[in-house]
Image (cartoon, rainbow, N blue to C red; front, top):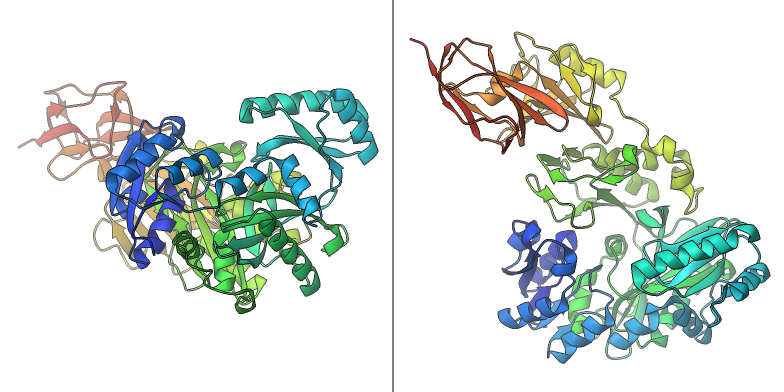
Length: 632
């Protein structure tokens, strides 16, 4: 077993690799950009090396810096994770040429599967079924249009160097072909520097089935069964599960055997995934499942395979890279139970899934049970920056049956609270509860076709709102995140910083300036988190924020007259001057945060002895804004 490992990645996959490496006694080295200086993967690793500015193109994608970091720290091997340089054959070759161990397939294997047209030709030769289509050298518009007619509409135009849904266009009729081809080639050139395309028959009821394969340097190749990744939005996976619903043993055997042939055709070593597209209009059948592409790396969704097989795939990677044989033979592998994974993103489904950035002031995934797992690279207080993929965690649940796994994941998502960064947790709950998902009567177009229903829920339910109002006072919803601006009330008995009234609530835990209460007992419990001037109330995967004017004193002041900023924000008004006399309740400073205004008021009669607030200034949480000396 190798002794030291540099992880050329960040976020949850870096933390995931570190976890297994630590169990194996392998010394870990993290790399980080400016934006990730305080990231979780940096803290979790045994040591860390700064590799450049925040943009990935100046840090995580610069192979020379990563190799230099490995040399500097004496790391024996480099694990690329997924994304970034994980499928870059030139980088893999540079790592090997530098005398380091590459935790991944041979560079030639990566190249063989890197271009979709060449890969399909190779698969045809290996006896792996491929989707009907055209992948010839003649790229003229006339030839491509002729081939599209021969295939029969609708057809799919696909960039041979594509990925992530880029460089793909569905064409329904010959009259639309020329414009779609031009658009596809233009996008392919911009994204991949290669405008060559292939054509495929469009599958009307497609399901995305993929098989986990593993090879070693001793000629052994096995599969670890299949996953279903059909729940996608704009060709991006959202929920994955293993095994694939509706897969009978005969079809499984045929598809997995084809995947092993595919891996052997490129002399594969390490973890890889053979992706297939299935025409599921009449169920899953072996003669209607075709090779689509190979991912020559560990997949984001590998945890569901780990859960049903009981194998640690990162451990397998490290053992294979160390020259060992595969830990298990094919006959020693079996499927046990069901597993499902949801990708939790910092994005706002109600606003077209735009990425959301900022500090995770509240990040709580609730209690974890034996059937639940979380892979994440953040924790409460971490910053979600605009520089990288907005996925903040993967929630994985397992059970004896598919229903058990779904129920566990739904429970996990319902208990997930993220604020003020927006997330897709409510969207995921809606998805899990949809009848067609429960019955698995769906294909890869399901989410886009039902988007309006799946993203609905911009306001709290009447039941939750009534429960909150019973304790928080009258409320009018306004602003982003279903926020409610609550008017001033003299008393807020259900929230006390010390020993809350048992009649109004039970303090579950105290995390600095965040307080979590279960309110009852007359109704179902309502969990409320206090963060600065906000009451954060989660419901069914959605997070709603409430503010109370009366909290301006509770959250922004102290008994000694120190008025602190309750959260990061912008000062939009300063209502007092240094040396001014103030009375209890006078407005001092108005802060804007998360598109809402928060007024901080005087806790008692007195005089302003220090003023550190200036209109237009940005302040951090805990900044002293005003100091008041009490009147005698």
